[in-house]
Length: 563
Image (cartoon, rainbow, N blue to C red):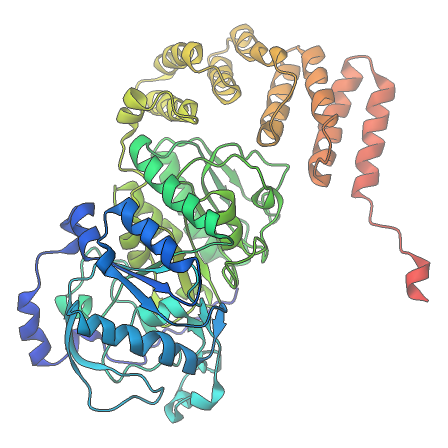
């Protein structure tokens, strides 16, 4: 991902629109952000592609689940490919959608007398009360660059901005923008870093998100899990992976991690230049934010990784969303694995014009919805960004207090208890945290909770109690893939406190698993070798050390390939 020091604007700000528009704005009701989900749902628009057999059915399903009137579903006849030309975008998406919105009087406006240079119909004046537009799977994702449509004045732009490629979503956000609005380069988003915008700006912008993914069932699962977590609350851990190519991106992602720590989430930070992988703990990934790898990998490609309902995924890369039909891209992998909210890019956006993860997260943590969080965290429109998720989704609608009271039987409830442990530790001190953790461990026995309780005991210099809390693990002979690193950490914890026999057994159990990731094996062999030696097993210790060296050695060149 490249950086850019110069910020430019290619059109005047929307707040300088015509007096007629200002007068019409007096008809607008109070701020959308103050409305309930029910009121927002009544005014939303769902856009589907009748050329795709699944698109309409998915749109209808989402409408039923959210209480959106079926009359608010707009059917277009667009290509089914993910990438389309500028002409296809104009002819099959932009102009038809604009006219439907006008015909149904969901938008009130005055059409400009002529088409623009791209063939688009434009509005000289517009007002609307549409809170969000949701694009369903089956609609094209991105618009290819067409150098023949670059305007003469584009020579004034920096070379990297002399393009009209973009996400379909980024262009549709400006469907109601003034006639002078070009498709070349980008324009600033008036919602960026703002809780509210002028009425003029609000009526020139459509806030867009998308319900999309590799398969139809992935999208259905996204919708269902979003609604599920709004009843029980988001539960799990947070994982923050910095060490990317630019300090600015690291600063954003670390700031997000610090917010999660302040909200008492158990949070792991990986700060080296390598990206997180199977060597790192990743159980119950309620929130993951990291960078910088082009393709999804490691745990995020695992077909049966246990992801909490409502999980939020973010991996900052210039091409994280070039396709949603594959699990190779980060956005496709997130959705296939069960994440419910993510953002990314379809072409090179340059670092300054990508979503700000810390702004997006701050709005969600404050109880806001995904649609507003996306709008506030996005610096530029008519550009490369996409947001996948239900705009009405509020991951923190349920408070931690309510989770502890009403959601204690949920699958990931132990992690809500761990979050409360962290809160008590911060507010009331170590003894209060231990008392609560001990009580919860009786009703919610789990490895994660046992490990957190053991950490508290160790902090209080009570190693005997810490070891006893972890001995639950001796009754477990088979571990899930998402528990392997947690088990390794427990084994190391036990070994340091004189329980090398149990620690050695745990390492042996994990290493007997089939299809372990290469780098996880390296970590296990290297971590287990000194424990094997301490347990009087020098042969096993030597073998594990040798296995680790062999795995780390570069592959031997094949002379036959050179011939």
